[in-house]
Length: 213
Image 1 (cartoon, rainbow, N blue to C red):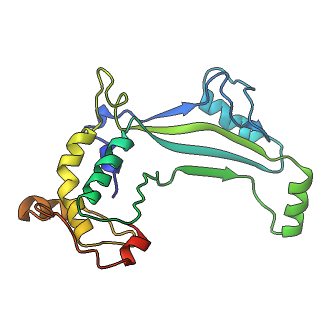
Image 2: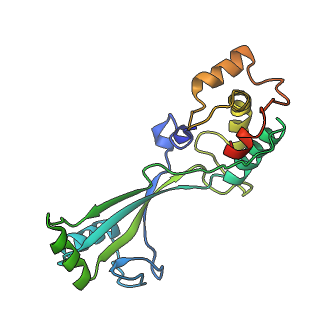
Image 3: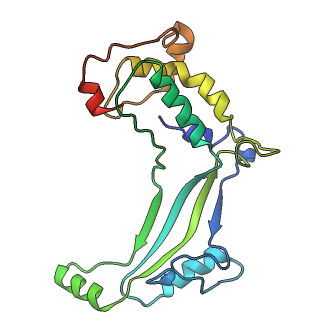
């Protein structure tokens, strides 16, 4: 399932995504071969880190921009999905994850065409890494249960109530190989009641137990 719609509200004035630079005293790759708490760059952090990377004379260097989702209660959603699958009498392995697509964009120094040259260069020179910047996409203004929490679009509980029947219908269909649960599934669950009333499912032997859901 694609949950990007939960991070971007229709009203653009309510967006909370932001750029975060490494904090003073925070261990990170700051232009060296090992994590360090130095150097610090003061104000205009992003611009200054970019300038340092561009002007770094190191022959092998990289600058990474990470993307993270903040304040989404993934444990709650995972628990609801596991309970739903268990209610269908499924006995196999269940793997649930919340990967962030395009989670890391990396800019690298230009590489020579000669693999021998590149190998020798890597052997005798340190790679300067800049991993000091993150693009943060909050699901909410605070963690679930904290006072004053404001969700970007809707809470985990509301989202689950809207999607649980379509997810259960997808489970009943035994979808595999990365098949998405889509808005069309959600509409069918709403308009046609698909997913409602599904209890146990005939899993047909050990095939699904071995492959997992």
